[in-house]
Structure formats: structure tokens, C-alpha cells
Amino acid sequence: MATVTLKNVKKIYPFVSGEGKKKKKKKDEPEEKKVNLQITDQGVVAVQEFNLDIADKEFIVLVGPSGCGKSTTLRMIAGLEEISDGELYIDGKLMNDVAPKDRDIAMVFQNYALYPHMTVYENMAFSLKLRKEKKDVIDKKVREAAEILDITQYLDRKPKALSGGQRQRVAIGRAIVRDPAVFLMDEPLSNLDAKLRNQMRAEIIKLRERINTTFIYVTHDQTEAMTLGDRIVIMRDGYIQQIGTPQEVFNNPRNLFVAGFIGTPQMNFFDAKLTKEQGRYFVELGGVKVELSEEKQQRLAANNVEPQEVTLGVRPEHTTLGDTGIVAKVDVSEMMGSSVHLHVTAEGRDVIIIVPTLEMKGNYGIGDTVHFNFEGNVAHVFSKETERNLEW
Image (cartoon, rainbow, N blue to C red):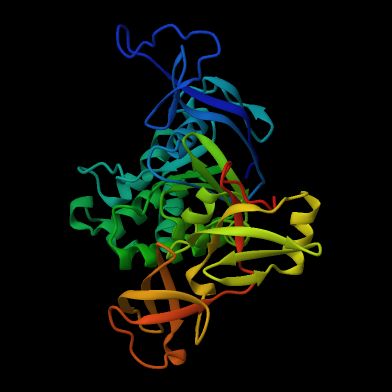
């Protein structure tokens, strides 16, 4: 088992000779941006000043949209990508120049990467044979891993005879038998259908309890991140946006990007005003004035936040329908079983209101007028200028 530490880690992809070179930058000219990634004289910066301490046996999830640098970071930990700058430590040992095979890590890829001509047993045993382990040791480890993953009955089959979920179990089993200090997983469930993905998520949670090692997991799916991670690292354009437990990043998003990325359906945003009366903060929207909660009052006061135009964020599940409140027009009504998702237009924005089925007072048709409200403890106020959460 192991700790992993990344200190100021950076990844720069150098320009191919004769291609992509920048014109000489004039003094005080801002850095060029291309597809939201910084371009420097050295090349394209894919990961910027990445700092993270991962505890022994912790399950860390790197999450973010495509191209944010999460897989590149994982590959640098694995040794499959060279670290351009900064330091990587595994169990206190500097690993920058250590070969992948000597890092005591195991990696599970998105595309399974199984040998098609080998049986499941042979695929799982392959790395142990390379280590020249004894046959009885190999057999014991393979069968133990197969039992954990419930694939014992498939040991004599070839990968082509297995479903996607079964192949992914084999890929995970091949990593387990190595008994690695660090387990790396690069979007392992993205090739599976929704039902199987849910099932495999549960399997990974159970697996984590049984093998008790350090996990670093990469995904673009925030639901996976929320259900699997002890802590989540949210990335965008090569930068870390926020690190915290699933509950922390859900309840206290540090900026507009995190607020919109975490949560399904995503947070509703409005143009609103933050006002202050007799030392108390309020948000005003659509003729409705809401006093913020005591906790939020204290944080805003501690930051000396002045009244201003803000972006207000309220999650769909934190809105409630009423006889009065912010006026909205119904566009679409989706029956989701235990709740109804009302897609409405309010204050010039597309808004989603989640109404528990048991609280429904009738059906809502397209064009119907409804009113909704929210409490001061669920309102998030973001700076128009910096997009930062003003509480933090």
C-alpha cells in the first residue's frame, strides 16, 4: 500500500519540428490560448502546477470534461508520460525517472487491452509469469482474484466469448493479481451501457473494500466520481478547480464551473442582485427577496463582500413550487418515477425544477404558468467578474 504525492507537476507537449511554433511574443502580450489550453514557447501545456497528496488506501477520483488533463496526469503517475516539471513521489520515493514496471502500480485501461489469443486465466497470469512466479503461487492468485470478481466460470474462455462487463472484470483481475501498491483506472466503465455501468460501479466499491489498496480513478462522469471517491479532484483546462469530498464539492462549489459540473441535473443559474440591509445579505431575483442563511452571512461578512450583481446558483432539487414566487413558464414535463422534472423558462433562463411525485398537485402542460421559491441556505452567489463563489 502506498501514499502518492504530486508536487507542482506540469506536462508540456512540445511542438513537432516545423509545426505549431508561436510567433515571438511581444512584451506584455497575453499568453495565447488554443482549445482552452495554454500555448507557451515550449509547447502546449496540458497539465498546470498539479499539487495533490493522496493518503494510503485512499480512493481519489480525477474528474472533468474531455481534454482537461486528467488522463495525462494518470499516465504521468504510471510512467507512460514523461513529467515535464515537478515531482512525483510514491511512498516517499521520487519516481520521475523510474521505469513504469518498477513503480509497483497496476493500470486498468478503457479498452480492456486483453490478449485475444489467450484465455482469461492466461491473461490474468501473464504478468506473474513474466515475474517468474511459481506455478502454484500464480494459480492461487488468479483463482482468488477470479473469485473476488465472480469470473471463475470464465477462466477457460477467450476474451471474444465474453461481454463487455466480463472483459472489464478480467482486466481488473489482471491488475489485482499483481498486488500493486497503487491501482490506476482510466475511465474503465465508459465502454459499458448504463445498466452495466451502474452494476460495475457497485462492484468496484466492493472490490475496494476487499483489496485495500490506494486507488486513483479517472472519469468524465460526475456520477461515478460522486459514488466512488473518498475525495474528488475536479479539473478544467489542465488546472485543478477544487479538491474535496463528494459532499463538500456538492454543497460548497468554489466556482461556477464546479457548480455546473457537479450535480445531475446541473445547477440552475440566474442573473441576480446581492444586497445588504442592516448588515444582512439578501439575494433578489424576479421580484423575490431571499435572506441568506446564517452560515452564508458569516462567510460573506468575513470576506467583506459588497452588494453587487451576481450569478445566483440554485440546484433543481432545492426549488419548490408555490402559489407565489418567481414566475416561470413550463416548456417540458418529464415523469421520472419518484419525481417530475419541470423544464421551465424563468428570468430569461432555462431552469429545471424537481417536484417529488407525492407533492404533485396536478399535471403541468406546456405553456402553464408556475411559481417557484428557494431557501437562503441553498443559494450560491458567484462573482460576475471572476466566477468565484463569494463565500470562499
